[in-house]
Length: 192
Ligand SMILES: [Zn+2]
Image 1 (cartoon, rainbow, N blue to C red):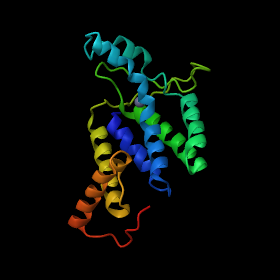
Image 2: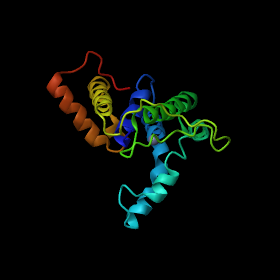
Image 3: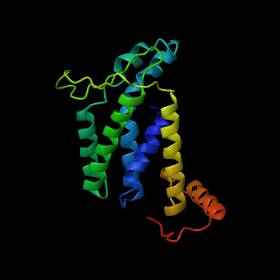
């Protein structure tokens, strides 16, 4: 799925827990980070290749979509997060949710399923994919993204924070104030 959907999904994974801004940021980063393996596509584009002809991007994409990557990222959370175990567990969940979303809804325009090599580099025996996978720009992805966006806006109104605040605290404050001016204050508006 696209990075915006993964970002919103990572934010949603962290919502049930009482976490600091930094720990929420780590979980969002966990949710989008497997797609850093698509970065070599930028080299293809710099070489003048078209989107349909990305040699390096095709070769490396999904190489970080593995159990080992999820475990390594979670281990890093144990070292740097404030609520170490909660952040590590939720980061692990967010990365595996990313894989599930890709398995369900990331079929390429050429029909390729982009299987998830979950046990690499230890074993190539698990190449996770499903025959009913839908396309990257199919309507279920639009629906999922819209639902996650609605959830994000609702919780921004309720709790006073949104993913915008991970980078821009003033913009986040203005966003929350706009929502609360429009829809009123929630019964419990204490920040979390
Ligand atoms: Zn992915």
